[in-house]
Amino acid sequence: MTEINENTLFCHVSGLLQVWNYMESFSFLGRPRPWHGFMYVRCSKVVFTEKNGKTLTAVDGDLIYIPKDTEYVVQFFCPSGDVADLLVNFNAYDTSGNEYTFASKITCVFSDTPKSISDRMQAIAEQSISMNSPHLAVTEVFYGLMSRIISHSLSETQEDPKKRSVSKAIVYIDNHLNENTPVTELAKKCLMSETAFRKVFREITGTSPAKYKMLKKIQKAQSILQSSPEVSVNEVAYMLGFCDVSYFYKVFFEITGTTPKKVREL
Image (cartoon, rainbow, N blue to C red; front, side):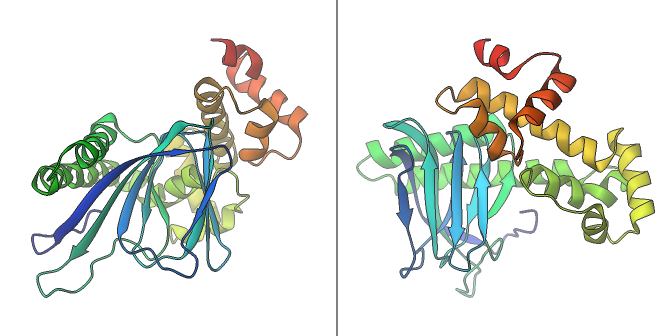
Protein backbone atom coordinates (compact mmCIF):
# COMPACT_ATOMS: atom_id res chain seq x y z
CA MET A 1 0.00 0.00 0.00
CA THR A 2 3.03 2.28 0.07
CA GLU A 3 3.91 2.18 -3.66
CA ILE A 4 1.06 4.27 -5.14
CA ASN A 5 2.45 7.06 -7.33
CA GLU A 6 1.13 10.16 -9.08
CA ASN A 7 0.25 8.11 -12.18
CA THR A 8 -2.40 6.07 -10.37
CA LEU A 9 -6.00 7.03 -11.12
CA PHE A 10 -9.03 6.03 -9.05
CA CYS A 11 -12.57 6.09 -10.39
CA HIS A 12 -16.06 4.54 -10.05
CA VAL A 13 -15.90 5.01 -6.29
CA SER A 14 -18.97 4.03 -4.26
CA GLY A 15 -19.67 2.91 -0.73
CA LEU A 16 -22.11 0.70 1.12
CA LEU A 17 -23.22 0.15 4.70
CA GLN A 18 -23.81 -3.60 4.46
CA VAL A 19 -26.47 -5.19 6.66
CA TRP A 20 -26.53 -8.98 6.86
CA ASN A 21 -28.29 -11.66 8.85
CA TYR A 22 -26.34 -14.10 11.02
CA MET A 23 -24.33 -16.55 8.86
CA GLU A 24 -25.71 -15.00 5.67
CA SER A 25 -23.36 -15.27 2.69
CA PHE A 26 -22.79 -13.74 -0.73
CA SER A 27 -21.02 -15.36 -3.67
CA PHE A 28 -18.88 -14.06 -6.51
CA LEU A 29 -18.12 -17.60 -7.72
CA GLY A 30 -18.63 -17.81 -11.47
CA ARG A 31 -18.86 -14.02 -11.77
CA PRO A 32 -15.59 -12.33 -10.88
CA ARG A 33 -15.82 -9.23 -8.70
CA PRO A 34 -16.12 -6.17 -11.01
CA TRP A 35 -14.26 -3.71 -8.75
CA HIS A 36 -11.52 -3.51 -6.16
CA GLY A 37 -12.80 -3.07 -2.63
CA PHE A 38 -11.85 -2.09 0.89
CA MET A 39 -13.99 -3.66 3.62
CA TYR A 40 -13.92 -2.39 7.19
CA VAL A 41 -15.29 -5.16 9.40
CA ARG A 42 -17.76 -4.11 12.11
CA CYS A 43 -19.02 -7.53 13.23
CA SER A 44 -17.50 -10.40 15.17
CA LYS A 45 -16.34 -12.41 12.18
CA VAL A 46 -16.30 -12.41 8.37
CA VAL A 47 -14.99 -15.45 6.48
CA PHE A 48 -13.77 -15.20 2.88
CA THR A 49 -13.36 -18.44 0.90
CA GLU A 50 -11.67 -18.00 -2.46
CA LYS A 51 -12.25 -20.16 -5.53
CA ASN A 52 -9.06 -22.11 -4.79
CA GLY A 53 -10.38 -23.00 -1.34
CA LYS A 54 -8.10 -20.69 0.64
CA THR A 55 -9.82 -18.84 3.46
CA LEU A 56 -9.25 -15.62 5.37
CA THR A 57 -11.05 -14.85 8.61
CA ALA A 58 -11.47 -11.19 9.51
CA VAL A 59 -12.75 -9.79 12.79
CA ASP A 60 -14.06 -6.50 14.13
CA GLY A 61 -11.67 -3.65 13.32
CA ASP A 62 -9.88 -5.31 10.39
CA LEU A 63 -9.46 -3.55 7.03
CA ILE A 64 -9.60 -6.02 4.14
CA TYR A 65 -8.51 -5.43 0.54
CA ILE A 66 -10.40 -7.45 -2.10
CA PRO A 67 -8.85 -7.43 -5.60
CA LYS A 68 -10.90 -6.93 -8.73
CA ASP A 69 -11.77 -10.16 -10.61
CA THR A 70 -11.53 -12.28 -7.45
CA GLU A 71 -14.01 -15.18 -7.18
CA TYR A 72 -15.01 -15.96 -3.61
CA VAL A 73 -17.79 -16.53 -1.10
CA VAL A 74 -18.06 -14.26 1.94
CA GLN A 75 -20.03 -15.19 5.07
CA PHE A 76 -20.97 -12.82 7.89
CA PHE A 77 -21.35 -13.59 11.59
CA CYS A 78 -23.30 -10.75 13.19
CA PRO A 79 -26.71 -10.12 14.79
CA SER A 80 -29.41 -10.09 12.12
CA GLY A 81 -30.10 -6.61 10.84
CA ASP A 82 -26.88 -5.03 12.15
CA VAL A 83 -24.35 -3.22 9.96
CA ALA A 84 -21.70 -5.89 9.38
CA ASP A 85 -19.20 -3.84 7.42
CA LEU A 86 -18.38 -0.68 5.51
CA LEU A 87 -17.53 -1.46 1.88
CA VAL A 88 -15.88 0.94 -0.56
CA ASN A 89 -15.67 -0.19 -4.19
CA PHE A 90 -13.43 1.43 -6.79
CA ASN A 91 -11.40 0.89 -9.94
CA ALA A 92 -7.72 1.80 -10.30
CA TYR A 93 -5.61 2.42 -13.41
CA ASP A 94 -2.27 3.86 -14.42
CA THR A 95 -2.10 6.69 -16.95
CA SER A 96 -1.80 4.17 -19.80
CA GLY A 97 -5.15 2.70 -18.85
CA ASN A 98 -3.72 -0.50 -17.41
CA GLU A 99 -5.40 -2.07 -14.38
CA TYR A 100 -3.69 -1.35 -11.07
CA THR A 101 -3.91 -3.77 -8.17
CA PHE A 102 -2.48 -3.78 -4.64
CA ALA A 103 -2.38 -7.55 -4.05
CA SER A 104 -3.20 -10.73 -5.94
CA LYS A 105 -5.48 -12.15 -3.25
CA ILE A 106 -7.82 -11.06 -0.47
CA THR A 107 -5.57 -9.46 2.14
CA CYS A 108 -5.87 -8.00 5.63
CA VAL A 109 -4.32 -4.53 5.34
CA PHE A 110 -4.63 -3.53 9.00
CA SER A 111 -5.88 -4.93 12.25
CA ASP A 112 -7.26 -2.33 14.68
CA THR A 113 -7.83 0.09 11.79
CA PRO A 114 -7.40 3.76 12.78
CA LYS A 115 -10.59 5.80 13.21
CA SER A 116 -9.33 8.31 10.63
CA ILE A 117 -9.66 5.54 8.02
CA SER A 118 -12.97 4.04 9.13
CA ASP A 119 -14.52 7.54 9.39
CA ARG A 120 -13.68 8.26 5.75
CA MET A 121 -15.14 4.93 4.66
CA GLN A 122 -18.29 5.77 6.61
CA ALA A 123 -18.48 9.15 4.85
CA ILE A 124 -18.12 7.55 1.41
CA ALA A 125 -20.88 5.04 2.21
CA GLU A 126 -23.26 7.68 3.57
CA GLN A 127 -22.67 10.08 0.66
CA SER A 128 -23.11 7.28 -1.89
CA ILE A 129 -26.50 6.48 -0.37
CA SER A 130 -27.84 9.97 0.35
CA MET A 131 -26.64 12.15 -2.55
CA ASN A 132 -28.23 12.27 -6.00
CA SER A 133 -24.89 12.78 -7.76
CA PRO A 134 -22.20 11.62 -5.33
CA HIS A 135 -19.35 10.99 -7.80
CA LEU A 136 -17.22 14.09 -7.14
CA ALA A 137 -17.86 14.13 -3.39
CA VAL A 138 -17.06 10.46 -2.79
CA THR A 139 -14.02 10.53 -5.09
CA GLU A 140 -12.61 13.49 -3.15
CA VAL A 141 -13.07 11.65 0.16
CA PHE A 142 -11.60 8.48 -1.37
CA TYR A 143 -8.32 10.21 -2.22
CA GLY A 144 -8.18 11.35 1.40
CA LEU A 145 -8.86 7.76 2.44
CA MET A 146 -5.98 6.47 0.32
CA SER A 147 -3.69 9.14 1.76
CA ARG A 148 -4.54 7.94 5.29
CA ILE A 149 -4.00 4.28 4.35
CA ILE A 150 -0.60 5.06 2.82
CA SER A 151 0.44 7.21 5.80
CA HIS A 152 -0.51 4.47 8.25
CA SER A 153 1.31 1.85 6.15
CA LEU A 154 4.44 4.00 6.14
CA SER A 155 4.26 4.59 9.88
CA GLU A 156 4.22 0.82 10.39
CA THR A 157 7.24 0.23 8.14
CA GLN A 158 9.46 3.26 8.81
CA GLU A 159 10.95 1.85 11.98
CA ASP A 160 14.38 0.98 13.24
CA PRO A 161 16.21 -1.63 11.13
CA LYS A 162 15.82 -4.41 13.68
CA LYS A 163 12.06 -3.99 13.92
CA ARG A 164 11.80 -3.75 10.15
CA SER A 165 13.73 -7.02 9.81
CA VAL A 166 11.01 -8.97 11.65
CA SER A 167 8.02 -6.79 10.66
CA LYS A 168 6.80 -9.29 8.04
CA ALA A 169 6.57 -11.98 10.70
CA ILE A 170 4.81 -9.66 13.15
CA VAL A 171 2.25 -8.61 10.53
CA TYR A 172 1.74 -12.24 9.50
CA ILE A 173 1.14 -13.35 13.09
CA ASP A 174 -1.27 -10.46 13.69
CA ASN A 175 -3.30 -11.40 10.60
CA HIS A 176 -3.26 -15.20 11.04
CA LEU A 177 -3.96 -15.71 14.73
CA ASN A 178 -5.95 -18.90 14.12
CA GLU A 179 -3.12 -20.61 12.22
CA ASN A 180 -0.25 -22.65 13.67
CA THR A 181 2.70 -21.36 11.64
CA PRO A 182 6.08 -22.86 12.61
CA VAL A 183 8.80 -20.43 13.72
CA THR A 184 10.96 -21.77 10.89
CA GLU A 185 8.42 -20.46 8.38
CA LEU A 186 8.25 -17.06 10.10
CA ALA A 187 12.05 -16.85 9.99
CA LYS A 188 12.02 -17.65 6.26
CA LYS A 189 9.58 -14.79 5.64
CA CYS A 190 12.19 -12.47 7.18
CA LEU A 191 15.10 -14.09 5.33
CA MET A 192 16.75 -15.01 8.62
CA SER A 193 17.96 -18.14 10.35
CA GLU A 194 15.67 -19.39 13.09
CA THR A 195 18.24 -18.58 15.78
CA ALA A 196 18.77 -15.00 14.56
CA PHE A 197 15.04 -14.51 14.10
CA ARG A 198 14.24 -15.63 17.65
CA LYS A 199 16.92 -13.30 19.06
CA VAL A 200 15.77 -10.20 17.14
CA PHE A 201 12.09 -10.97 17.70
CA ARG A 202 12.61 -11.09 21.47
CA GLU A 203 14.64 -7.85 21.39
CA ILE A 204 11.81 -6.06 19.55
CA THR A 205 8.74 -7.53 21.26
CA GLY A 206 10.18 -8.54 24.63
CA THR A 207 8.95 -12.10 24.25
CA SER A 208 9.10 -15.21 22.06
CA PRO A 209 7.05 -15.61 18.83
CA ALA A 210 4.79 -18.16 20.55
CA LYS A 211 4.09 -15.95 23.57
CA TYR A 212 3.61 -12.89 21.37
CA LYS A 213 1.01 -14.74 19.33
CA MET A 214 -0.78 -15.95 22.44
CA LEU A 215 -0.89 -12.40 23.83
CA LYS A 216 -2.37 -11.11 20.55
CA LYS A 217 -4.95 -13.92 20.59
CA ILE A 218 -6.11 -12.97 24.06
CA GLN A 219 -6.19 -9.26 23.17
CA LYS A 220 -8.36 -10.08 20.17
CA ALA A 221 -10.55 -12.32 22.34
CA GLN A 222 -11.08 -9.44 24.78
CA SER A 223 -12.13 -7.18 21.91
CA ILE A 224 -14.63 -9.70 20.54
CA LEU A 225 -16.06 -10.49 23.98
CA GLN A 226 -16.72 -6.81 24.66
CA SER A 227 -18.02 -5.84 21.21
CA SER A 228 -19.99 -8.95 20.18
CA PRO A 229 -22.20 -10.34 22.98
CA GLU A 230 -23.94 -12.67 20.52
CA VAL A 231 -20.74 -14.72 20.10
CA SER A 232 -20.29 -17.31 22.84
CA VAL A 233 -17.02 -17.76 24.73
CA ASN A 234 -16.60 -21.18 23.10
CA GLU A 235 -17.03 -19.64 19.63
CA VAL A 236 -14.42 -16.99 20.44
CA ALA A 237 -11.99 -19.70 21.52
CA TYR A 238 -12.50 -21.77 18.35
CA MET A 239 -12.36 -18.63 16.18
CA LEU A 240 -8.86 -17.93 17.49
CA GLY A 241 -7.58 -21.46 17.00
CA PHE A 242 -8.06 -22.94 20.48
CA CYS A 243 -9.21 -26.54 20.12
CA ASP A 244 -9.47 -26.95 23.92
CA VAL A 245 -11.81 -24.39 25.53
CA SER A 246 -10.52 -25.16 29.03
CA TYR A 247 -7.00 -24.29 27.82
CA PHE A 248 -8.37 -21.01 26.43
CA TYR A 249 -9.81 -20.17 29.86
CA LYS A 250 -6.48 -21.04 31.52
CA VAL A 251 -4.39 -18.87 29.17
CA PHE A 252 -6.92 -16.04 29.28
CA PHE A 253 -6.70 -15.90 33.09
CA GLU A 254 -2.89 -16.12 33.10
CA ILE A 255 -2.59 -13.12 30.75
CA THR A 256 -5.46 -10.92 31.93
CA GLY A 257 -5.90 -11.95 35.57
CA THR A 258 -9.62 -12.36 35.01
CA THR A 259 -12.10 -14.61 33.16
CA PRO A 260 -13.79 -14.20 29.77
CA LYS A 261 -17.16 -13.95 31.52
CA LYS A 262 -16.03 -11.03 33.68
CA VAL A 263 -14.55 -9.23 30.66
CA ARG A 264 -17.88 -9.58 28.88
CA GLU A 265 -19.66 -8.01 31.85
CA LEU A 266 -17.48 -4.86 31.81
